Amino acid sequence: MDLAALKGKVAVITGASRGLGAGMAHEFNRHGIRLGLCSRSAPALPDGPDVVTEQLDVRDGDAIAAFADRTAKQLGPIDLWINNAGVLEPMRPLRDIRVEELRDHLDINVVGVFNGMQTYLRYLRGAAHEGVLINISSGAAVHAYAGWSAYCAGKAAVDLMTECVALEEAGGFMRVHSVAPGVIDTDMQELIRNSTADDFPEVERFREMKRDESFNSCEFVAARLLEIAFDPSASHDEVVLRLPAEN
Ligand SMILES: NC(=O)c1ccc[n+]([C@@H]2O[C@H](COP(=O)([O-])OP(=O)(O)OC[C@H]3O[C@@H](n4cnc5c(N)ncnc54)[C@H](OP(=O)(O)O)[C@@H]3O)[C@@H](O)[C@H]2O)c1
Image (cartoon, rainbow, N blue to C red; front, side, top):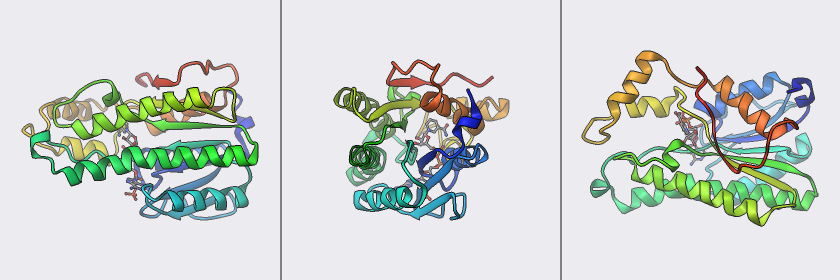
């Protein structure tokens, strides 16, 4: 892909304080992409001429809409929006999960994605600008794990919600994808490795991954997402995508 062509593009990343969101922010910044970054704690890059930051909760749709507005006013039309913010907990058998915990989880991982999608869609239509939206999904959308009922349900919902929007917006201003990024060594993975086999029976497999360092790097994921968004030679037919293993 022509990396020089990325310079000056504008991308929004939610969940940009740490982990994959922070890693992507650094990579995109390196390519000269201007950024709108948000998370509850401070995003990984400071505010500046090419970076707009906001501390917000993706559960708050009004806050996301105001942030999109401010980003576009300061940086110009938004070319790419990545709904990356997400949580894993509660991670234990469903019989031990309180309904409030499930609601809270889905409020972030599904309603948060809905808020980002709706905001970006309304923005693009209002601005008559064409853009790409990527929801960060997971292999857990299509593979059941004992202990991950909330997470699997939420990510499956994101995949299907994305496919519905792809149908609704076909031929319109927004191209949408839901992308499983592979396993990346973030706080979320540490949380998994620190769980117990009672709560998450497959924990040992994830500890082995750490011993083998068999992860996808943020740099690799960022590069693949930029291809999906901006490489004219890439196929854009599939809505739900799964990134390959880096090594
Ligand atoms: N790591 C993996 O192996 C892996 C694999 C497949 C998919 N994913 C997906 O990749 C995405 C990023 O995961 P990660 O591993 O980077 O996790 P992480 O290290 O725990 O980071 C999660 C990010 O989301 C933000 N966030 C969480 N709740 C939020 C809320 N209510 N409002 C705004 N921001 C919120 C966090 O910031 P604050 O806490 O400051 O708000 C943080 O920046 C998630 O959607 C995850 O499901 C990860």
